[in-house]
Image 1: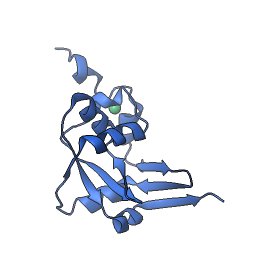
Image 2 (image 1 turned 180 degrees about the vertical axis):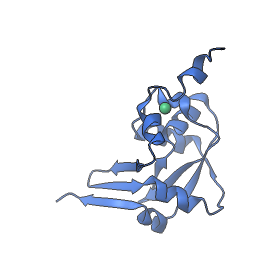
Image 3 (image 1 turned 45 degrees about the horizontal axis):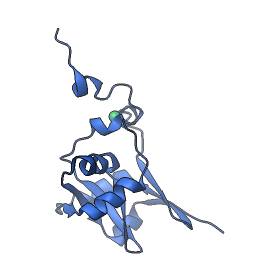
Image 4 (image 1 turned 45 degrees about the vertical axis):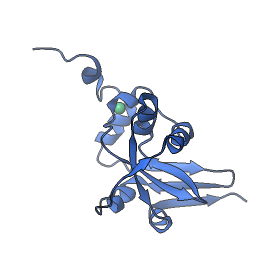
Length: 136
Ligand SMILES: [Zn+2]
């Protein structure tokens, strides 16, 4: 039996993110906070909405840099992602927020590859909102 090596071997093994995604019951969420509010988005809902046949957009280097610096990420999991899958972003008060695809965005940024993402309209992003906490 040949042993798989390198990236292939580590794929999905002992990665908390991959483990969580294998559990069917896991609801994937994305939490975003600005100075005032905290929003929690349901990623599954976002994925269903963008599956309507719309085309992914090319993400500019500038936007990609903002995405890469915005979200927390796991270094191990970066090697497990499929770069051919577009991310999902929306805009709040004009500023783009990446809801899905952080690890892909960071890897594309590091490798200077073109990253694509589907855009959710404001109304669509509201549909994905699980919770919105306003601070007093
Ligand atoms: Zn992983």
